[in-house]
Length: 298
Image (cartoon, rainbow, N blue to C red; front, side):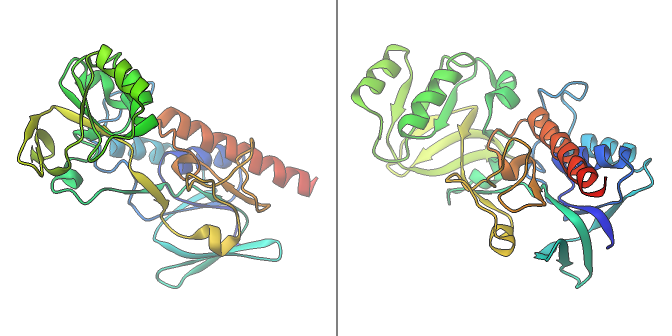
């Protein structure tokens, strides 16, 4: 057996778990491919003591702190295969290297599936954003768009009305809002545009104009959207654990998946992608993993 625990993913959830397990003197391997979901985000917010730092700065500080604990190792690489052989977990990297551990923690994040709209990819995480608690203060009182439809658009518009009074819902086609929802939105001066989007005109990711297929244009400072997501790798098929209807890893209150010994933390297991929540989930997973190891050995 090479390690007590292998952590796949070295962003906030994985780092938090590594710190906790390192302090528990567990032999840990953290494998990270260097592609965090927040890589393009200019600044992270709403995270105590690190407000307005870049994600890379926060990760760098965390990694330096963790490396003080001698039982934690980091490895740059991409895990292609993860499997359970009796009571042992084995991973195989892209370069062919294999490692084994007693427990496995997935902190692999999510893959955002962005619509094929010109300019959207370049604006993503800069001026096309997903969370008002992470980004809302920076664009408060600005002219904002909401790229959603139906119930999701209504609930998000209700929330955003706290930060932005000049709000336009962009349904990108026929509205799925109910007549009652439309009446309520209009009573709050929230506009609804059903035109299909052609392009987001921007300057280095900073949104300037939304161009529609019918030739109309709309000047906006930012757009909120919640893209569909997928897991980065089909570990659910390889290891046999379940996903939720939202394509996140199904976990219990102890961060354990439906396969014993496999835990999940961070974005891969929740759509509440706040840094504080993600970090806490890594700590909780580590504590539960350590408890399981203690119970097995005592």
